[in-house]
Length: 524
Image 1 (cartoon, rainbow, N blue to C red):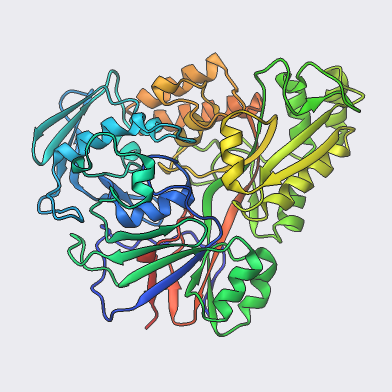
Image 2 (image 1 turned 60 degrees about the vertical axis):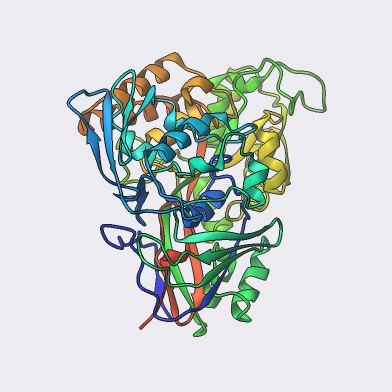
């Protein structure tokens, strides 16, 4: 069998052109968490985006290591005016309905992104810097900003292009029903049955070449044991999120292959550092209490009380990496000065005493139980660690279909969440998770703890306008250090992901954690 131990993904080439189909075959993939919607601009989350990647293209696509590759744009870059970027578009591309792709479709997409109602996590994070869209001609488009945006290419590598022919007023429900799911991607949406399956049919006219698989079925199987059983029984060809408890056994099974790679997804805790009274924080035994999470000493105590090494070794079976910041080593903007925080319950208790909470307080940690690897078990472990420093800590987990809506509505006090950097660099989590919630700028779109720090915002703003890569990386690292010092969030670990395939297939791991049909190929 094949088994790649913690390897980063290998680049597939300079473009996402697909191999010619050697033979027609259907592919069935089991994923741990189903898509919440088929609207490509509704919910910026990995389980949605991996499906959208099949149906829609972006101006700039991303390879397995999130390297930027030509997509619907063949070339791009800033003009002589540092506030204007120009994209030269690919000609001869058609949407699934046969209509030609032009710059008008790009303009329509950028205008649509901020208008999608009730978005739990909006893509406006990546489009808010665009002050004006200029259609030069059918295959040339420019974006003007109020200040330099050196990450324009990275930002637009996250936004899926839809057809302007879908018309104004196309709703998320229309996309779910397939009425407006018209993209230029290698597959067409055929069926979306929530809780059961998503079926995609090959687009034989795809500009990158006909897909290898005639149809692809995604089946959500939230139970890890059931996913493994489906693979071993031959009911599915590929499974995502192989449970850590089964990896050792599957290594010895010649009927399957395992493929493993480090991701950029950090698992972390949001803390309600904003409200004077927080809904799931109280005095020990009950009773109102002023929100202790507003005190940085309390937040530091909660972080010091978490034994990250124990989470990795005992909960994650050694298949994870302890986290001291928002991205693992090697990604752009990571700080070299930050180390993983040592487990120190004595220091944690001393900080609580100093902050006036020597007798502790009660809080509930909320989290999903079907979104991240061992998510419910991680939450339980953290609550037990907090109990050891004198807190009355409890846990409530729920299906992600319920959890994220409630978390985005700010119903919780402490939350276990994960974030994968869609742009492949540090500004993604800094802007979405930690920046002050400013909807018109697209900042803090997933800042569910409502952390706010003017010095941090100023550093991030400076970084996002810095043209020099070296200087921007330094500013992003400095902003990260400030965020960690103020315990804006509490990172716990980075996920290491494992995919399982039948014995005659291989899968190329991706740092964005997506499970995509283009990454599945036949072994020689």
